Structures are given as structure tokens and as C-alpha cells.
Image (cartoon, rainbow, N blue to C red):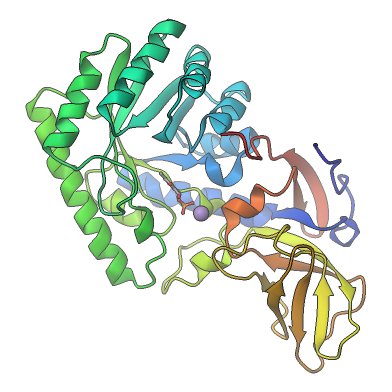
Length: 368
Ligand code: PLP
Ligand code: MN
């Protein structure tokens, strides 16, 4: 059930009810501008990943700064964006099952829709859904460029699948999906360079083999917040798929040489108990903030350490002299931004201490 917004425009930040998903608009806009400025000289386009923000409002702000479209991870996100007016959407993932494919095909009449495949049988299913809907769907071959998740082997296997796509009158071969997920959080720049060096090399070889068969790659997509500069400099990738850059999180901040973006996303929490010495408890446990990539940090309060999360309690350890008062509101920096956003119905946009806007997290929730 959609919850009412925890704030109204014009309120002071301390008046926002908690736990709330807070977006610091100055930092957020600076991140969008910074990514646009970093990619401009490379000629490589941004197709920002909407699995992070799940919001056509944020998608539009990214596209106003030059993003060519959006990536999504699932059909429900594609629906929220397409019906929200976003014209160009890539499902950077596999979609399996006739009902999901029928939903995807239905979107192809209101937006440019593309999807990935890594299996010949799956290509047949996508073609059948496109035929039934009377549309043509763009399909990218996903290759495994090193992360060992989805994707066919680069080289001949990828070429064979691309030929199958190109042979279908209901599909259009759109290029390669080549995302190296496990490289994003490798801590040292050297490890990230080695991983993306390999990814770019196998991708380059596959693009060349496709070209020899007369198959051009309109899109060669990949790259996240941890490595996008490497993909952008490779000369192979045409689109970058970073998502977290808009918000950042404590896990990305732990990379040696963290990505050049500011923390803009916070969970606002209230101190609700101080009954033990050296301890304070906030109303944001792991139902309010994702802890799969580590516990949150307390912004701007070095004497407070978030040390344990239960369902609805966050336990802070308090250094001498750093005690918060009961009822005080604290900004938590999530360990992982994407699943944290998915826990909320509303972004509360704040600027210099005042609530400026409320944006729905339109594609939140469990629907695939
Ligand atoms: N592209 C794909 C296919 C992904 O799965 C992800 C994240 O897992 C991203 C891009 C974006 O990554 P990030 O949010 O770390 O920038
Ligand atoms: Mn993530």
C-alpha cells in the first residue's frame, strides 16, 4: 500500500517524519552534471541505470543532461518509465516467461524498447512475443566479459546468437551488452583496470567478428559507477550504464580512489532511545536501510557509529561527548543505495535544510 509522503514542501528537514528517503538536491544535481561533463569529451553516451532510482522524474533529469535513454533490470521498471514518458529503454538483463515478454512487447508501441538475450531458445520466445504484439524488438547479445553471471561466451558463440536475432523478421540485432559487475567494487584501481581491460578486449574482438559477418553494433553497453571511465576510454563501448553515481553509497566510498561523486542520498532517522550509557537507538533498522553491502554511516557525526541493525532498530555506539538528544534527526549514509531506495514510496528532496519536492519511487516493489 502506498504510504502518504513523510513531508510537505517548505518544511524544515528536522520536521520530516522518519524513517525517510532524503535526497540532497544540490549534491544530486552536482552528480548529474559531473557525469555529463566527464563523458562529454569521450563521445560515449550515458544510458543511466534506473534500477537505482526507479523514477521517471530522475530519468528525465538525466536525459535533460544528455543521457540517451535508460537501462532497467526488469519489466516492471520498464513499464514505470515508459508510461512515465521515457522514450528509450534497454532491459539490460534477460526476460524469461511469456507473460513478462507480452508486457515488454506491449511497451514497444509507446517507446523504443530493447532487451538482452544469452540463449537461442530465448530469442525465439522474444520473437514470438514481438510477432503477437505486431512490433519489432531490438535485442542485444549479452556476453560474459568476466563477471560470470549472465551472457554467452564472447566470440563465435555471441556471433551465432546475433545471426539468429538478425534472421528474425520480428527482431532487430541491436549490439552487445557487456557489463562487468564484479569489477565495480574491486577496491584498488589496478584491479579495476585489469578487469575492464579484459572486458574491453573480448568485447572488441566480438564487435570485429560481428562486423566481418555484416552485423553492426549500434549499442555496445556496459560500465557502472566504479569503472565507467575505463569503459568510456576503451574506444569500444558506446554507452555507459552507471546508476549509483547519482546517489552514491558507503560501499562505493570505500573503493580506494572512490568515484568522483557526492553522497546525495540519505535515510533520515530519529533518535528514539538513549537508555544505555554509550548507546543511542534510531528508528532505522534493516527494514529502512539496506545492509547487504555493509552498515550505514552517520553523516557528519564522527562520534556516532552505527553498529547493529535489527528489523526496526539501529544501534549507535556513542563516543564521550557525542551523544545525540532524544528526538534528534540524523542523516544515515546507506551501505548500498539501490535496495535502500526500493524500501520507500517517496523521495524527499531537500535543499539547504528545506523540503523542496516529493517524488514517487514509481517502480518500487517486488514485481518483476
Ligand atoms: N548495468 C548493469 C547491467 C548492472 O547490473 C548494474 C548494476 O548492477 C549497472 C549497470 C549499474 O551499476 P552501478 O549502480 O554500480 O553504477
Ligand atoms: Mn548496486
